[in-house]
Image 1: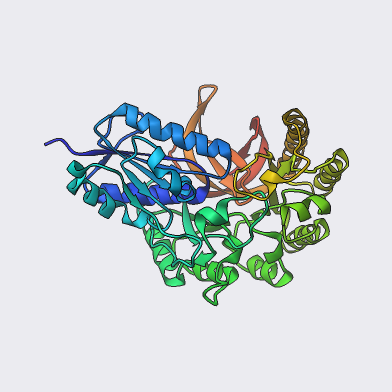
Image 2: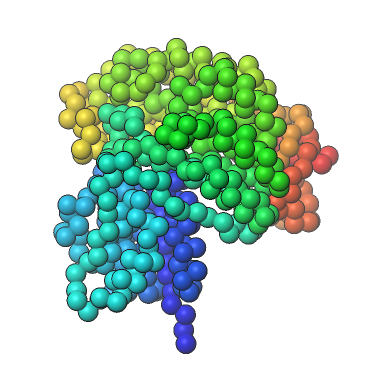
Length: 439
């Protein structure tokens, strides 16, 4: 008898990716063979995104593609797009199951229920009113064989309500995963041989605010897990970067000095319109604390250009601020109007052509600063966790990353995947990749 086949496609953030992996494991445990999304399958799951209108469009496209691949398959739409578009569920033809946020844990039950009643017709809609307080959804990923880095979702939801963001309406209020559950998953991941953990959440900085715990306490607890060599953090808000917080982290040898500190704008007037809860000066002080307690930490960020009302002068303030801080990497986004947010109806919408010009300018600046950060390590000794082999000009190498997430390569015939090494960074192998020797 041929095994049933399932295919999954993820759209959006790292949290979505984690949840997609959890659903993949549920389907495998239920007896499905997991195949590529481009193949013919019995079940298709699209974990949707709704962060922008473009994300909505991509979600619709992937769901339509699944239906065209196999007219008899069960097509499941899960996640944020489903949550915010619940009222439109009936207008999305070809979808068999709508699975909202905080209901992904019920994937198999919903699938079996649908198959049992399929002859009755009509889609199965399984959502909750996410804007009411919900418990943390019990998803976990424990099987990570063959991986060097694993994500652990520890938090969901957001209470910030930035004026451009729909996510609080799609994900609900901030809620934290139980510490014992996180530690249990960390132990399972370590038992599978994985050496690096990345903590992720929709608003990671709010971890513990609803349970009496703290993000720093969580990190300290995970650091006690045997087999885990590194702990890397997802995106942080500037407000959590206090002296006590940074001092605690600096005393944890497993922490990676790689901090993604959300900025969005270096202009206080723009930050106020965005409803961000900090100033440029406060952000700068957070960066100074990180650089005081860590030797050359990698600080990365997000920047939105062309936010409603952003004048040329405000843009130049942001550019000057970015040059002052000197980031390792910057993710530059052109403001995208999102229906249902306050920013979507603000006056002073910036023309697309001007957004593109500003974006290109900051992307060029980002490349310059990124190269500058990596050049610092030339001639220095660093630790790297190797991940995968590759060929370059007919020679065999292993690629990996330092704790600061600088990509390196070592010349070797051996498969040293998932091995931590120390060595001297001696030169540039390729653009963005440095050669480590004497390891």
